Image (cartoon, rainbow, N blue to C red; front, side, top):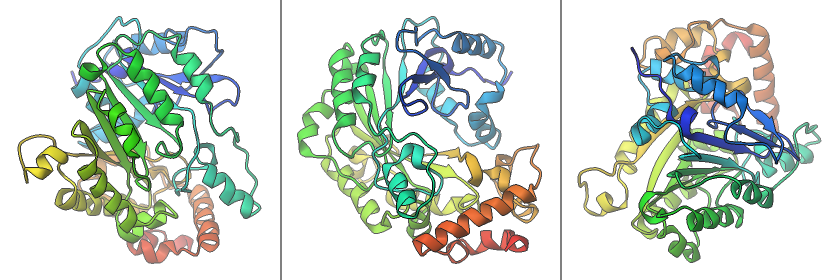
Length: 379
């Protein structure tokens, strides 16, 4: 039987304070669709919904809400689940999480195409400046609420924490939470891995180096969906030269217990070009600091992870031309077996692309010419 056991279903906890401006939403991981809204006084570790999911996973079947991992794995790509299985193996009957995913501050300096105002203050500002209605919550930071929530959890089993935003390296909110966790988890220097998801536009102040060294490992995961002009289109208004130079500098300057990762969001924009970032990664940013300085020692490779975009730019909005082109590549299995061309939704997507191209002075047809050709009948 194919391995579908997920250590995050049995030992993971994702907390999102942006789904509801006053309440809390929890899940077993950040990629699963179904979030559970709870009250501050509820038992957030043993909600009935997550307990039911744990029992379902015991049967060795993929749950419908876990397609974000099922689809990449069917294409032979390492998923979030498979990466976590390599890290934790089988862990059951836990009194508290072994892995935390925390999202509580939407402060951000980018308006990425595959993101939105629910996770970025810059997105909110961008829409407001262009007189576009915002329907998302406008709460920026709930660091105090999160700290109160963490104090009710048993963190003795905790081995990994992922901090996501917003941009986690803006301001001090994520460092406040990191400091609390590091000082609370027993033997943090031997068992705790702390991971910051970052867009690469920020650096790390030296005053945090001592805190970093209290962890077993600190990882910085760079959200990058392409290189050069493709990166700048998707991660607007970031600059590829600045971001890539930041990555090199952080690798050289941060303490030796720091590692890096690249995480790529696969959307209709970059599906055809996935090899470009992979080649850049292997040629320029494949080794962590220790091995980099040894010029290629064994181990410590920088991983290049990938996950599927949701929403309007997801792979559900491919055309027949696009699908035919991808079927000839190693990425063919990323396309759902239930895929059908949806002309109504694709037309909406093209209109959305054109609207923001005009506002930002961009042109997706010049940046992604092959992809634009796949949508030629809609242009």
